[in-house]
Length: 56
Image (cartoon, rainbow, N blue to C red; front, side, top):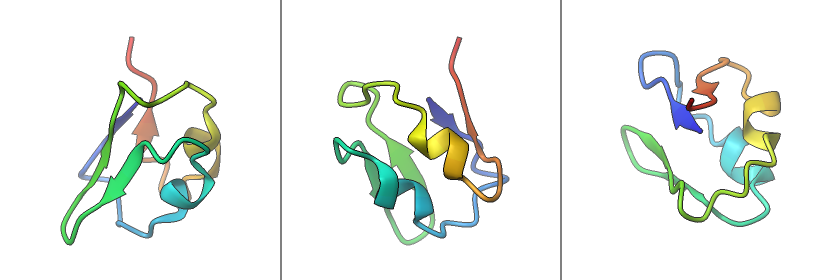
């Protein structure tokens, strides 16, 4: 998963639904730790800004 920073409004909704705490919120950006990510797609589904995309 990756975050389109130009779309992300740093609301934190994605971090709240991540079952493995792979999403970190900083003051001006959100990052996904792809080593921890289990590809459950919870963040992709819940993101209100549609800022999370699947990496190919």
